Length: 229
Image (cartoon, rainbow, N blue to C red; front, top):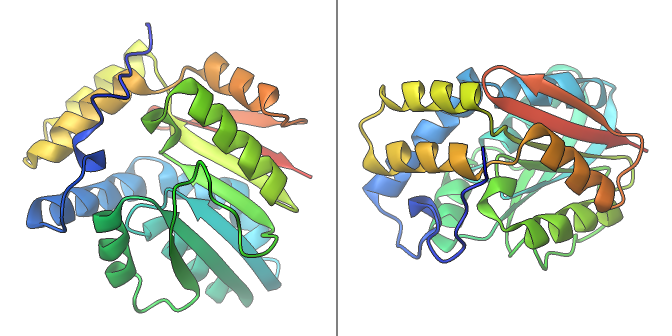
């Protein structure tokens, strides 16, 4: 399957738009998808040892959407006496505003409005994470983001995304039948076609200077690559 991505025809959620009920519903749907279809599992699998070790951990989460994964990281840390502070980076103005509201009860999450292609961290985070966002970018931009992540982090990097494969696309299309929000349905199906294959994502991370990487598949149609320094 060839990757189908057109930077001049972005997904509906990425297009200029104000805060609206449609976008709020779409982001709520994405939070549900993250919880039940693999994103939470990846956080627990990769960052679990970090979030449960005690002490203090700083994480930068790029393209954080409405902030459900930063909130999850903080909550996991709280249960184990770990002070987790997350710099939640989001470039879309309306999504940024919705995310700030969603995370208003979690002061450990600090929202930053910035383009991840030019983002610079306020300090030196322990981990830099990017989840379910890389497929929104052309390959050259994805490479730059991966390089920026590797440079910014002091302890590890994690990128998680969809995997482009026929079986994954079939599952995503099936899941989209259960949603009624047009933005969610349209973007889910487009994301399946724009995602990187397992080999493409591995090659991108290696070309960006990541070394000693681990790569795993996760249910359903998800993949992750990470490096611990």
